[in-house]
Length: 363
Image (tube, rainbow, N blue to C red; front, side):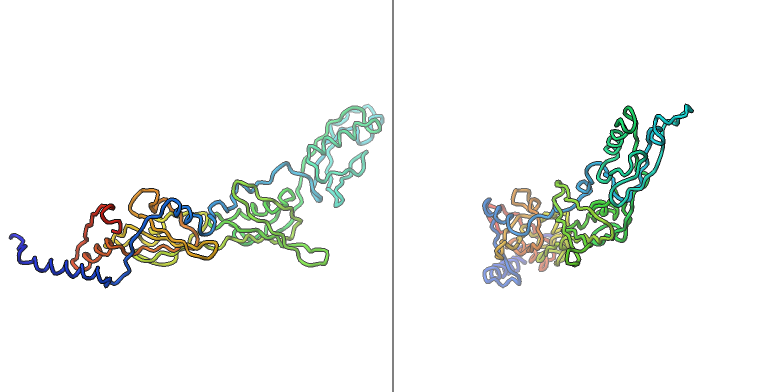
Protein backbone atom coordinates (compact mmCIF):
# COMPACT_ATOMS: atom_id res chain seq x y z
CA UNK A 1 0.00 0.00 0.00
CA UNK A 2 1.64 3.27 -1.06
CA UNK A 3 2.43 5.83 1.62
CA UNK A 4 -0.30 8.53 1.52
CA UNK A 5 2.06 11.50 1.40
CA UNK A 6 -0.71 13.93 0.63
CA UNK A 7 -2.70 12.78 3.64
CA UNK A 8 0.17 13.22 6.16
CA UNK A 9 1.80 16.26 4.60
CA UNK A 10 -0.06 18.70 6.91
CA UNK A 11 1.20 16.72 9.93
CA UNK A 12 4.84 16.95 8.86
CA UNK A 13 4.45 20.59 7.93
CA UNK A 14 2.87 21.30 11.30
CA UNK A 15 5.63 19.43 13.16
CA UNK A 16 8.26 21.29 11.21
CA UNK A 17 6.67 24.65 11.97
CA UNK A 18 6.45 23.72 15.68
CA UNK A 19 10.13 22.69 15.70
CA UNK A 20 11.17 25.94 14.05
CA UNK A 21 9.13 27.89 16.59
CA UNK A 22 10.73 26.02 19.48
CA UNK A 23 14.20 26.65 18.14
CA UNK A 24 13.46 30.29 17.55
CA UNK A 25 11.99 30.83 21.00
CA UNK A 26 14.61 28.84 22.87
CA UNK A 27 11.90 26.72 24.55
CA UNK A 28 13.66 23.40 24.01
CA UNK A 29 14.06 22.27 27.61
CA UNK A 30 17.85 22.40 27.61
CA UNK A 31 20.62 24.88 26.99
CA UNK A 32 21.97 24.93 23.45
CA UNK A 33 25.56 25.99 22.88
CA UNK A 34 27.17 27.19 19.68
CA UNK A 35 30.65 25.63 19.80
CA UNK A 36 33.68 27.47 18.53
CA UNK A 37 36.96 25.61 18.17
CA UNK A 38 39.95 27.15 20.00
CA UNK A 39 42.75 28.76 18.02
CA UNK A 40 46.29 27.49 18.39
CA UNK A 41 47.12 30.23 20.89
CA UNK A 42 43.92 29.62 22.86
CA UNK A 43 44.62 25.89 22.94
CA UNK A 44 48.14 26.43 24.33
CA UNK A 45 46.79 28.79 27.00
CA UNK A 46 44.12 26.26 27.96
CA UNK A 47 46.61 23.40 28.24
CA UNK A 48 48.82 25.56 30.49
CA UNK A 49 45.93 26.06 32.92
CA UNK A 50 45.18 23.65 35.73
CA UNK A 51 47.58 21.72 37.99
CA UNK A 52 50.85 20.31 36.75
CA UNK A 53 50.71 16.90 35.15
CA UNK A 54 51.44 14.28 37.84
CA UNK A 55 52.25 11.48 35.42
CA UNK A 56 55.95 11.42 36.27
CA UNK A 57 55.63 12.26 39.96
CA UNK A 58 55.76 8.64 41.01
CA UNK A 59 58.64 6.84 42.68
CA UNK A 60 59.49 3.80 40.58
CA UNK A 61 61.69 0.83 41.50
CA UNK A 62 64.29 2.11 39.02
CA UNK A 63 64.84 5.15 41.22
CA UNK A 64 65.01 3.12 44.45
CA UNK A 65 68.55 1.82 44.20
CA UNK A 66 71.20 2.00 46.92
CA UNK A 67 74.27 3.11 44.99
CA UNK A 68 77.83 1.89 45.60
CA UNK A 69 79.39 -1.08 47.45
CA UNK A 70 78.49 -1.93 51.02
CA UNK A 71 80.50 -0.26 53.77
CA UNK A 72 80.97 -1.96 57.10
CA UNK A 73 79.07 -0.64 60.10
CA UNK A 74 79.22 -1.12 63.85
CA UNK A 75 77.71 -4.43 64.92
CA UNK A 76 78.65 -6.35 61.76
CA UNK A 77 80.45 -9.66 62.18
CA UNK A 78 83.53 -9.92 59.92
CA UNK A 79 85.43 -13.05 58.92
CA UNK A 80 89.16 -12.69 58.30
CA UNK A 81 91.46 -15.13 56.53
CA UNK A 82 94.96 -14.08 57.64
CA UNK A 83 98.47 -15.42 56.93
CA UNK A 84 99.54 -18.14 59.40
CA UNK A 85 102.45 -16.08 60.73
CA UNK A 86 100.13 -13.67 62.54
CA UNK A 87 99.64 -16.13 65.43
CA UNK A 88 103.23 -16.23 66.73
CA UNK A 89 105.34 -14.49 64.13
CA UNK A 90 107.48 -16.14 61.46
CA UNK A 91 110.60 -16.48 63.70
CA UNK A 92 108.74 -18.65 66.24
CA UNK A 93 108.02 -21.42 63.76
CA UNK A 94 108.95 -24.92 65.04
CA UNK A 95 109.46 -26.28 61.56
CA UNK A 96 106.14 -28.11 61.47
CA UNK A 97 103.78 -27.66 58.53
CA UNK A 98 102.07 -24.35 58.95
CA UNK A 99 98.38 -23.90 58.02
CA UNK A 100 97.72 -22.09 54.80
CA UNK A 101 95.71 -19.41 56.61
CA UNK A 102 94.25 -18.45 59.95
CA UNK A 103 90.50 -17.82 60.11
CA UNK A 104 89.08 -15.56 62.78
CA UNK A 105 85.82 -13.69 63.30
CA UNK A 106 85.53 -10.24 64.82
CA UNK A 107 82.48 -8.21 65.82
CA UNK A 108 82.80 -4.55 64.88
CA UNK A 109 82.71 -2.51 68.07
CA UNK A 110 80.70 0.66 68.59
CA UNK A 111 83.89 2.68 68.14
CA UNK A 112 84.26 1.19 64.63
CA UNK A 113 87.21 -1.11 65.30
CA UNK A 114 88.00 -4.82 65.44
CA UNK A 115 90.78 -6.59 67.38
CA UNK A 116 93.28 -8.35 65.09
CA UNK A 117 96.35 -10.50 65.99
CA UNK A 118 99.61 -8.53 66.07
CA UNK A 119 97.80 -5.32 65.05
CA UNK A 120 95.49 -4.84 67.98
CA UNK A 121 92.62 -2.39 67.51
CA UNK A 122 92.04 -1.71 63.79
CA UNK A 123 89.48 0.74 62.32
CA UNK A 124 87.07 -0.77 59.76
CA UNK A 125 83.79 1.19 59.92
CA UNK A 126 82.96 3.01 56.72
CA UNK A 127 85.25 0.84 54.59
CA UNK A 128 84.34 -1.77 52.01
CA UNK A 129 85.59 -5.36 52.53
CA UNK A 130 88.09 -4.80 49.72
CA UNK A 131 89.45 -1.64 51.36
CA UNK A 132 89.80 -3.49 54.69
CA UNK A 133 91.72 -6.30 52.96
CA UNK A 134 94.15 -3.81 51.43
CA UNK A 135 94.68 -1.86 54.65
CA UNK A 136 95.20 -4.97 56.80
CA UNK A 137 97.63 -6.47 54.29
CA UNK A 138 99.69 -3.25 54.27
CA UNK A 139 99.88 -3.26 58.06
CA UNK A 140 101.01 -6.90 58.20
CA UNK A 141 103.60 -6.25 55.48
CA UNK A 142 105.51 -3.76 57.63
CA UNK A 143 108.94 -5.02 58.80
CA UNK A 144 107.82 -4.94 62.44
CA UNK A 145 105.09 -7.47 61.67
CA UNK A 146 105.59 -9.84 58.75
CA UNK A 147 107.99 -9.86 55.84
CA UNK A 148 106.39 -9.69 52.40
CA UNK A 149 102.87 -8.88 51.30
CA UNK A 150 100.47 -11.37 52.91
CA UNK A 151 97.12 -12.46 51.46
CA UNK A 152 94.11 -11.23 53.43
CA UNK A 153 90.46 -12.04 52.72
CA UNK A 154 87.59 -10.25 54.46
CA UNK A 155 83.92 -11.24 54.23
CA UNK A 156 80.83 -10.18 56.14
CA UNK A 157 79.50 -13.17 58.07
CA UNK A 158 76.59 -11.41 59.70
CA UNK A 159 74.96 -8.05 59.23
CA UNK A 160 73.71 -6.07 62.17
CA UNK A 161 69.90 -5.84 62.07
CA UNK A 162 67.51 -3.20 63.39
CA UNK A 163 63.74 -2.70 63.19
CA UNK A 164 61.87 0.12 61.50
CA UNK A 165 58.17 0.71 60.84
CA UNK A 166 56.95 1.63 57.36
CA UNK A 167 53.35 2.82 56.90
CA UNK A 168 51.32 4.62 54.27
CA UNK A 169 51.22 3.96 50.52
CA UNK A 170 53.45 0.87 50.49
CA UNK A 171 52.63 -2.69 49.50
CA UNK A 172 53.59 -4.31 52.83
CA UNK A 173 53.15 -1.83 55.69
CA UNK A 174 54.32 -2.80 59.16
CA UNK A 175 57.50 -3.50 61.08
CA UNK A 176 60.51 -4.64 59.08
CA UNK A 177 63.93 -5.93 60.07
CA UNK A 178 66.77 -4.26 58.17
CA UNK A 179 70.31 -5.48 57.80
CA UNK A 180 73.08 -2.98 58.19
CA UNK A 181 73.44 -2.81 54.41
CA UNK A 182 69.78 -1.73 54.21
CA UNK A 183 69.89 1.04 56.81
CA UNK A 184 68.44 3.78 54.65
CA UNK A 185 65.02 5.04 53.66
CA UNK A 186 65.30 3.32 50.29
CA UNK A 187 66.25 0.04 51.98
CA UNK A 188 63.20 0.32 54.24
CA UNK A 189 60.92 1.00 51.26
CA UNK A 190 62.26 -2.03 49.43
CA UNK A 191 61.72 -4.19 52.53
CA UNK A 192 58.11 -2.93 52.59
CA UNK A 193 57.52 -4.10 49.03
CA UNK A 194 57.94 -0.69 47.42
CA UNK A 195 55.52 2.18 46.99
CA UNK A 196 52.09 1.36 45.62
CA UNK A 197 52.23 2.00 41.89
CA UNK A 198 48.54 2.91 41.66
CA UNK A 199 48.95 5.81 44.10
CA UNK A 200 52.58 6.87 44.07
CA UNK A 201 54.02 9.14 46.73
CA UNK A 202 53.94 12.88 47.32
CA UNK A 203 56.53 12.92 50.09
CA UNK A 204 58.17 10.60 52.62
CA UNK A 205 58.45 11.43 56.32
CA UNK A 206 61.06 9.90 58.62
CA UNK A 207 60.00 10.09 62.26
CA UNK A 208 62.60 9.24 64.88
CA UNK A 209 65.32 10.61 67.08
CA UNK A 210 65.42 13.89 68.94
CA UNK A 211 67.13 17.23 68.48
CA UNK A 212 69.41 19.03 70.95
CA UNK A 213 66.37 20.15 72.95
CA UNK A 214 65.02 16.61 73.14
CA UNK A 215 62.18 17.29 70.71
CA UNK A 216 61.16 14.62 68.18
CA UNK A 217 62.75 15.10 64.78
CA UNK A 218 60.88 14.72 61.48
CA UNK A 219 62.85 14.54 58.26
CA UNK A 220 61.13 15.03 54.91
CA UNK A 221 62.12 13.53 51.57
CA UNK A 222 60.50 15.04 48.52
CA UNK A 223 59.81 12.46 45.83
CA UNK A 224 61.62 13.27 42.62
CA UNK A 225 60.64 12.53 39.03
CA UNK A 226 61.14 8.93 38.02
CA UNK A 227 64.27 9.67 36.00
CA UNK A 228 66.04 11.34 38.95
CA UNK A 229 67.26 9.13 41.83
CA UNK A 230 65.61 9.62 45.19
CA UNK A 231 67.87 11.45 47.67
CA UNK A 232 68.37 8.69 50.25
CA UNK A 233 68.84 9.13 54.01
CA UNK A 234 70.59 6.87 56.50
CA UNK A 235 68.66 5.21 59.33
CA UNK A 236 69.79 4.16 62.80
CA UNK A 237 66.88 1.86 63.62
CA UNK A 238 63.63 2.46 65.44
CA UNK A 239 62.38 5.09 62.99
CA UNK A 240 58.87 5.25 61.54
CA UNK A 241 58.69 5.98 57.81
CA UNK A 242 55.45 7.43 56.50
CA UNK A 243 54.82 7.35 52.75
CA UNK A 244 52.23 10.03 52.01
CA UNK A 245 50.33 9.51 48.74
CA UNK A 246 49.41 12.46 46.56
CA UNK A 247 45.88 13.85 46.91
CA UNK A 248 43.35 11.79 45.02
CA UNK A 249 42.69 13.30 41.63
CA UNK A 250 39.24 13.48 40.07
CA UNK A 251 37.28 14.96 37.20
CA UNK A 252 33.59 15.67 36.68
CA UNK A 253 31.42 14.77 33.67
CA UNK A 254 27.84 15.95 33.16
CA UNK A 255 25.37 16.52 30.38
CA UNK A 256 24.63 14.19 27.47
CA UNK A 257 26.36 11.15 28.96
CA UNK A 258 24.96 7.95 30.42
CA UNK A 259 26.33 8.49 33.92
CA UNK A 260 27.09 11.99 35.14
CA UNK A 261 29.24 12.32 38.24
CA UNK A 262 32.67 12.73 39.78
CA UNK A 263 35.26 10.13 38.78
CA UNK A 264 38.53 9.34 40.55
CA UNK A 265 41.72 9.76 38.59
CA UNK A 266 44.63 8.18 40.50
CA UNK A 267 48.19 8.69 39.26
CA UNK A 268 50.02 7.60 37.20
CA UNK A 269 47.03 7.23 34.87
CA UNK A 270 46.51 9.78 32.14
CA UNK A 271 43.09 10.06 30.50
CA UNK A 272 42.27 11.94 27.36
CA UNK A 273 38.84 13.42 26.79
CA UNK A 274 37.50 10.33 25.04
CA UNK A 275 38.61 8.06 27.91
CA UNK A 276 37.01 10.41 30.43
CA UNK A 277 33.72 10.22 28.53
CA UNK A 278 34.03 6.43 28.47
CA UNK A 279 34.32 6.53 32.28
CA UNK A 280 30.89 8.18 32.25
CA UNK A 281 29.46 5.33 30.18
CA UNK A 282 29.79 7.15 26.87
CA UNK A 283 27.57 9.80 25.34
CA UNK A 284 23.81 9.74 24.86
CA UNK A 285 23.25 7.68 21.71
CA UNK A 286 20.01 9.43 20.80
CA UNK A 287 21.49 12.92 20.92
CA UNK A 288 24.84 11.75 19.50
CA UNK A 289 26.69 14.91 20.63
CA UNK A 290 29.74 15.85 18.62
CA UNK A 291 31.31 18.42 20.94
CA UNK A 292 32.39 18.58 24.56
CA UNK A 293 33.72 21.47 26.62
CA UNK A 294 36.35 21.30 29.35
CA UNK A 295 36.61 23.84 32.15
CA UNK A 296 39.63 24.13 34.43
CA UNK A 297 41.00 26.63 36.93
CA UNK A 298 43.93 28.92 36.15
CA UNK A 299 46.62 29.81 38.69
CA UNK A 300 44.88 33.14 39.40
CA UNK A 301 41.59 31.40 40.20
CA UNK A 302 39.80 32.27 36.97
CA UNK A 303 38.24 29.57 34.79
CA UNK A 304 39.59 28.55 31.41
CA UNK A 305 37.30 26.74 28.99
CA UNK A 306 37.67 25.17 25.56
CA UNK A 307 35.44 23.14 23.26
CA UNK A 308 36.64 20.06 21.37
CA UNK A 309 35.27 17.69 18.78
CA UNK A 310 34.58 14.19 19.99
CA UNK A 311 33.92 12.60 16.63
CA UNK A 312 37.11 13.36 14.71
CA UNK A 313 40.88 13.02 14.66
CA UNK A 314 41.98 16.62 14.23
CA UNK A 315 44.48 18.27 16.56
CA UNK A 316 41.56 19.78 18.42
CA UNK A 317 39.78 16.45 18.87
CA UNK A 318 39.14 14.84 22.23
CA UNK A 319 41.65 12.03 21.73
CA UNK A 320 44.54 14.51 22.01
CA UNK A 321 43.42 16.45 25.08
CA UNK A 322 44.78 15.26 28.44
CA UNK A 323 42.39 15.55 31.39
CA UNK A 324 43.81 17.21 34.52
CA UNK A 325 42.84 17.00 38.16
CA UNK A 326 39.69 19.00 38.84
CA UNK A 327 38.58 19.31 35.20
CA UNK A 328 34.84 19.67 34.56
CA UNK A 329 33.66 18.14 31.27
CA UNK A 330 30.34 19.34 29.91
CA UNK A 331 28.62 17.58 27.02
CA UNK A 332 25.85 20.04 26.20
CA UNK A 333 23.28 20.33 23.46
CA UNK A 334 24.05 21.90 20.15
CA UNK A 335 21.32 22.48 17.56
CA UNK A 336 22.20 19.19 15.90
CA UNK A 337 22.22 17.09 19.08
CA UNK A 338 18.92 18.58 20.18
CA UNK A 339 17.35 17.78 16.81
CA UNK A 340 18.58 14.20 16.98
CA UNK A 341 17.24 13.75 20.49
CA UNK A 342 13.94 15.46 19.60
CA UNK A 343 13.24 13.15 16.68
CA UNK A 344 14.23 10.13 18.77
CA UNK A 345 11.89 11.03 21.64
CA UNK A 346 8.95 12.36 19.64
CA UNK A 347 8.94 10.11 16.58
CA UNK A 348 10.72 7.07 18.01
CA UNK A 349 13.66 6.90 15.62
CA UNK A 350 17.18 8.25 15.53
CA UNK A 351 17.63 11.09 13.14
CA UNK A 352 20.72 11.14 10.97
CA UNK A 353 21.67 14.75 10.54
CA UNK A 354 24.56 14.93 8.10
CA UNK A 355 25.34 18.57 7.54
CA UNK A 356 28.80 19.71 6.50
CA UNK A 357 30.75 21.71 9.03
CA UNK A 358 30.99 24.60 6.62
CA UNK A 359 27.22 24.79 6.45
CA UNK A 360 26.55 24.49 10.18
CA UNK A 361 29.46 24.15 12.62
CA UNK A 362 27.09 23.93 15.58
CA UNK A 363 25.50 20.55 14.82
